[in-house]
Image (cartoon, rainbow, N blue to C red; front, side, top):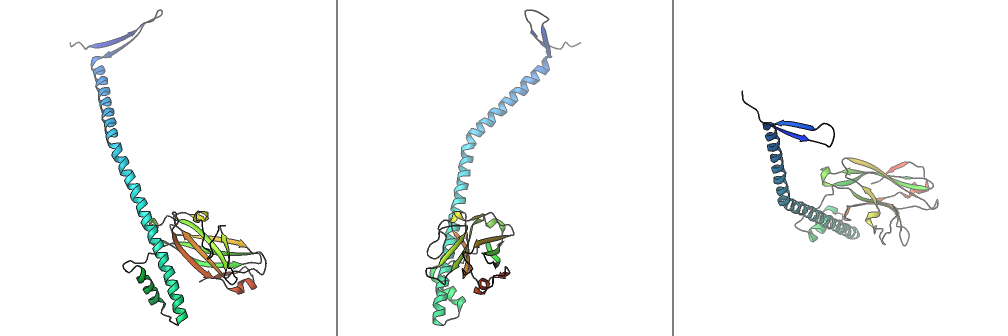
Length: 256
């Protein structure tokens, strides 16, 4: 009969019975081998982490840098698109004063004069279903922010609704949320606006301000949407019918 080698660990105390633990040799060798394998694996993983972490960190920083550069380019495109929009408005006003009604051609020429080799930027969000409601003590605008194309293209932004009275001199502007505006009613602190997260389909928004008196009225309401970095994405102005203020019936009136 083959004799099996056994290792025994004996623990003795000053009194009482000794404590002994016997382990066969092959089990002891197996435990030691497993411990050696685990130690080697941990050592290899530690070395790999020390050597690979700086490279992974560099790749992560490069990724963040590319994202920032993409956002900067997108904001530049937003700004250029707004400049085109302003140029088209000026060209249309010039055309109206000269009797020329070819709006599309004027807009095309105005854009081509600035950026002849670029296509107009189409924002990934748009204002739709814009309506107004006037009461004796308040005026309210109701509208939707709707997705335009791929939902992943937009990251939301900051929103303002500004009620304007351009019949008086100087013009009067009431902003919601409250924000300082320049002489043309343009918000001067974009982060004071309503924070809108990514628009996946469409969301309905209501903004209301109080009328200081029954005689107070507004001629327009302008909706602004700024990107999260402050670039102007959308600016749409809608005319308000004076009749709504003369007969405030709280009925919803669609704006175009």
